[in-house]
Amino acid sequence: MISPISQPDPASGTERPNNNLLRRLSSGDFALIAAHLAHEEAEANELLYNPGDDVDTVHFPCGASLASFLVANEDGRDVETILVGREGAVGGIVSLGHLPAYTRITVKFGGPFARLPIAKLDAAKTASVSLRNVFARYADCLLAQMFQSTACNAIHTIEQRTAKWIISAMERANGDNIVPLTHEQLATLLGVGRSYVSRVIQTFKAEGMLEIRRGSILVRDREALQTRACLCNETVKNHFDEVLRGVYPAD
Ligand SMILES: [Zn+2]
Image (cartoon, rainbow, N blue to C red; front, side, top):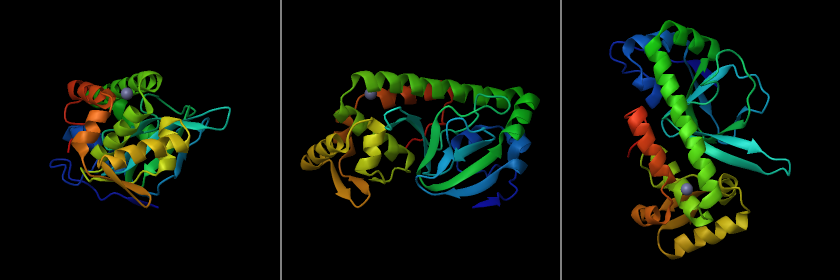
């Protein structure tokens, strides 16, 4: 479902979509793309791109919406690499012009997104060095997330990674302690079987850190959960803070 976003007031920025990257742009830079932004409501599990698809649109998650990058594997298991919330965008951040998608990109938590044709973003990058700079900085943060995710998958335990993903999803959900992640989704995020995830979740539950709801997880003791997570999420946040201060969601 797509409808045009109401014409924002570039001077105040009050009607900007609730996406931190878009809010980070100066009034002048936002005015370059404002007229081309459209609002869309996306459902959980909706497909944005398949590998090889022509990337022609940038999607900016707004509010608590989340997108994820999945790498398809030859044995049929898809592994999620990183989550992108209102601190960023998916599709064609680095590219100039149409290029094929490398990963599958899906909607993890449904909700509002702002969409922008790549051609309009490219034109704005050509017209403004400062706008180009914001997106280049975001690309650097995205790369940092990828590096960290690679290291995390290699050396951290399933328990550490489970706690990390739950906290990381929670941070984007406006501090809400209900995280709409199913065991199935967590298993995909971790690249392990469902039974491994269920075991870890049961341990956390037995220790009073969380409760299991239908299709979601209710976090009861975030601090305790934090102590069980690896520090990968914090490391990425610190990089965001240095490169694009104020863009990573804080609760
Ligand atoms: Zn880690």
